[in-house]
Length: 179
Ligand SMILES: Cc1cc2nc3c(=O)[nH]c(=O)nc-3n(C[C@H](O)[C@H](O)[C@H](O)COP(=O)(O)O)c2cc1C
Image (cartoon, rainbow, N blue to C red):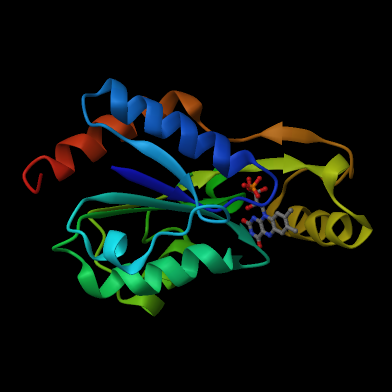
């Protein structure tokens, strides 16, 4: 199974690679695939194989390569099983990890008309030291609105890594009837 990912600062890449390893451990061959280096051709997209698509949010939008791939895969779902995962800081809050509770994920699905088997938001990483002045100012603003740290220096990994094995198990179970 392909675990397609886009990533700006590398955190989503780490999640995608770890998830691919966990899916392999659960008995389904899987490989993480960086959309910036290895964008799938039409034949690979059309193949009925299940896939995972995971992208972080930047300023309310998923990364363009991931959204492009979602637009291509969406009409093929649900015959082509899709697991859609959104990485963002909003998902650090209770109730914001489901498609109903996470506005980015909900809109991503609605805009593409995709019918994913599983759709979830995963809490991302706050890394103030890596942001330029503009981004740091904007993220501080977002954090002040949502009750997070506004110091401009914190590095906090909000990802619940302990929940990924259970997600990998669910992904394997969900695709099993289709496989
Ligand atoms: C410039 C920038 C803009 C962001 N915008 C949002 C946002 O609008 N909403 C949100 O919940 N998270 C936002 N985030 C948080 C990222 O989604 C999170 O840091 C994620 O872990 C980044 O993944 P990456 O390292 O793979 O790029 C933003 C992060 C950055 C750096």
